Amino acid sequence: MRLTQPCLILSVAALLSAGAAKAHHSFAAIFDSEKPVTLTGTVTSVEWVNPHFHFALEVKGEDGAVAEWRFEGFPPNMLVRQGWRRGETLKPGDTVTVSGWQARKEPYLGSVHSVRLADGRELTAGPPASIGGR
Amino acid sequence: MQSRARASVLRLSAAVALAAVASTPLGVVAQSRSATDDVPRTADGRPDLSGIWIATSALGLLEGMEAVQAARAADREAGRSLPQPEPPPYKPEAEALRQRYLDRQGIDDPMSRCLLSGVPRINTRPLPFEIVQLPDRVIMLYEVHHAFRIIPTDGRPHPEDLEPTYLGDSVGRWEGDTLVVEVVGFNDDTWLAGTGTHHSEEMRVIERYTRDSADTILYEAVIDDPVVFEKPWRMYDIFRLRPNERIREYECIESNEDIVRFEELLRSGGAPQSN
Image (tube, each protein chain N blue to C red):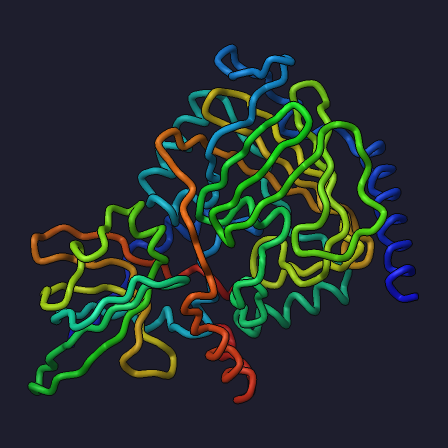
């Protein structure tokens, strides 16, 4: 497992005001913006559901142990407007690199921000960490 | 008996709202702009607000920062600008409640339970909405929540049998090229914008929609709630036309795990405190 620092949050945060748009839920109640994660693994399932799509990722650690992470992100209507296609963009068996943030309590739950696909494309898949909470 | 009393309160609210409109200055944003020649107009000469729109404040989530930067550049080129955002002018006890909501990281947000976002928040969600302008009414079709508002513009008043609702009751009228919408009859189970922006059932909202170009609508909402605010709170945004867009279905409750999560957080002592 590799942990990296977030790098692209501030520009969005700078736009947010009292009247700002917001994703469906409070990010900060569930996820920890101080725990960015970047994980490479194999997709085992994908669910295109509202209000957040989910996918599972099998990740092999440095000690060889395998953990199954679960990530959640945008609703399907936002994914398709970001260029995603159901059943094509992300499917079981794909090897991808996921960037996001870990949950505060659940060790293998994450909020996805972007996914780098096997063909090198990096697509936005979820909100920045600054959405929700304060 | 209670419902009759509530109806009386709502009628009074509507009357107060009308009085407030009379004393409210014309929209700050609309005053600073005149419509360009390419603004489409209906047969009666009104600017035609019809189209599918997204708030600029929501564009970053929907399309990413490049789209926001392009929008900002277009606004600069057109000389289009908005006043600085104002903090909500809460009375001390109402501000204390907002702080409690902030400390609880937003788990009380009605939207997280898939309840309808109220006005003006529903206009700034990161999914598009469609405006259909007819001679006697304006219809708002929101992708988020699959919700709608029907805004009569034929001079009728608010109904007398209003029950408190999430989106309230809207009536509209034209002031020059600006559609002015008065909204009353809200329940108190919506937030206005960001985390903790609560209000009471006494809230009245005056919205102003001004299509200043073929591609943009200037939006201003004046929120008056004497129970929680020291003075009316003004919000602004710019709606941007999405010519190749369509409104899709969005069923929020389909797989909403936040309801269970937040209930568990509440049972276990509440959300973690802010970092």
